[in-house]
Length: 346
Ligand code: SAH
Image (cartoon, rainbow, N blue to C red; front, top):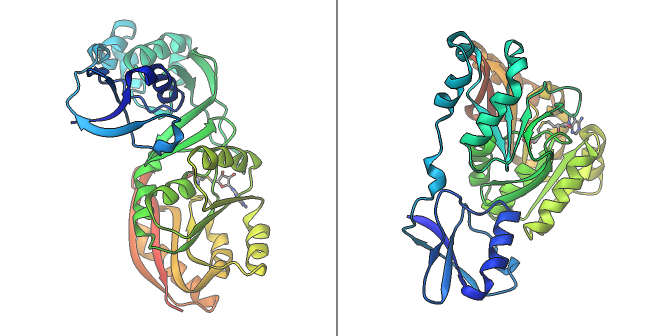
């Protein structure tokens, strides 16, 4: 079954433009026609009041689009690369909206455009291919060199019912954390006040807003572009309970606290040196609450890491209990991006 949007025939072209502009059109299937209506296959539901005309969601069978007869990446790469080159070429990509970010090993730089063209050809939802850089500096930004397709760095990424507007070079964003963001959203209880430290372009606040009954979500991010793009997403998603602040969490959070703001839950998605921020997070938490602490931890050191956190909470006068430790990514063998969920009991 495919998710479809049913609109009157006369609204079809407006609908198509809206769906394409917002990356909501599901290109894997063909548009269906009924006597008076057109049914568009879509990726996600959205707020229907964003359309100025009548429309409804439905589910149904839709014919697979011709686009599905696209060549396989591996087969196409084999045509231009030697066996040796095939061993080093990266076959994975990060897809953010309609932009693909691919890794090019040094040995293949002379063929980078040809390789990028193949990624473009083998993935019909992609219009731009950029070359992966290294995350650097406080903002964790990467320089993304243009390879092929439309020369642009702005896109709209659809994730967990939220549409995220961003420039992939100006703000940190990892599409790989989608499941984790949904996991956190599901833990948020009705009426909670949530603080997201290091909120980037706002993926955590927006996904939580779309998938929970939180009362409000505040996000703090040092890169001013984070709030800039996040505020666009808030508006476009018609969200009214997310507030983004620009600045260093060390300065902004104590200020929010001094204005009387305290939170039921603090999310800390900065896996590098997040340690030093725990005190600030605890200071913003109500008497009882929850902390989601992200860090890169070696498999053998999970227990040690948890003990350290509990001890640090204790030295701040708080009693912390481990709820769970989750592997949410991996950067080296046995080294995991983890989320440690803590309940603060007092
Ligand atoms: N939560 C976002 C971004 C995580 S990356 C996402 O999942 O996409 C870490 C982010 O922390 C970066 O955007 C970086 O600019 C921000 N950052 C680093 N140090 C900071 C500080 N002291 N205060 C606020 N934000 C900070």
